[in-house]
Image (tube, each protein chain N blue to C red):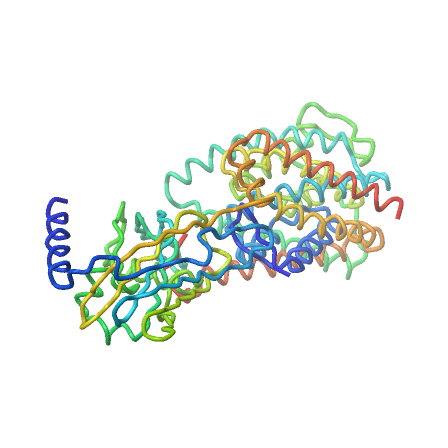
Length: 247
Length: 297
């Protein structure tokens, strides 16, 4: 821990020594800092506008609320494919999306990408517990692969568009299976293969209206919700037979 | 048109859900089964998380089975006494089942247990029903009424089930209700596909009584399951359930109507084929190499 703090400190020192300008280098604004989920939610678009004083490239990294994830591996045991091994990861961002104004490899060396965890392959998650003889990295890669498949992790970075030399816009489409909670966007200004400046902006995704009512009723009043669910179904069944008898 | 399900936290097509509910309701009304063994995999297929699929379809089954019971009852085809005895057994069985579920889960092999039991039970029942169905339709009543001594002949507590026209021990339907219910609570389904053949082949209840009576029992079991799922795991999505319901209650009416026209053995053959398809599908998944060996829960 102390090592990490020291490292970050040294890093911050070198960064500020090289570039002097702090985060005022980038100014940011989100079109929506709250994305509402109601019954008609089919996904959304996260639109970020920003301005930079000096020219450079921009990388944005959107991260969703962290969660625990269990990855299992199937094995063939006497002719049947059975899930045997498993690894439980902690702090897995539910959404991880990269956008960049130029191809990542061209603007930042491998070490820089790795250091700031820019790009799914540089992600690492703490392991809570594991029951496998295989390399845990294959489990991590599988997790990322599955997340990319359902559109929650970027496969290739989205585009950050520059309008002129100083203004940029990044818009990222997110699917409906997105998790509600606090989100963050890290914005990096890259110049001469180095990160010149970094800023974070936050936004929230949350349920509203009927969607929120149902969710909080189910979680905050479990007994009543259970009884309600049964009674509602009974009523529905009775009402429907009534209806059909008349019709 | 897409609709967002607040508990499942996914967005699905409204008409797909309605059609799914309708289809399962139709089968439910036709055969007197809940249809859980069909709707759970189908919901998972359209992207609903498995736990939410199980929980929400339980509440949908309550409404569908009530609606079905009333449909059958109006035609005088529910044996309440028989259903009540089976229900008593069912409640005992569900407690044993929940306990067994806990043990298997601790051993870490609950998934395998579920898949294997499904394949074995579905396969066994479908084969049994098909053979019987084919035999009866080919050798129409050639040597019917071959009175055999059955296992419950010697049991005490004999009583007359007037509606079904059977005189037998209460312990027989009680035991069957209990046994099916153990499987139900470990497998997380309504259990009609097990109950119906058991009633037909083991208890020899007249086929006209089977549908209504089994639905009567399923109605209560699914009610208990709905409450427990909502209370323990918060996996009942009322938006999902309501949409499935709207489709379901319409489907079940058509199912009940058709069931009066369809001959018993044909209905059973049809049900057997549906069960067989599900069984083969599940078995196929167990023996073929998965596309991705790794999966995220």
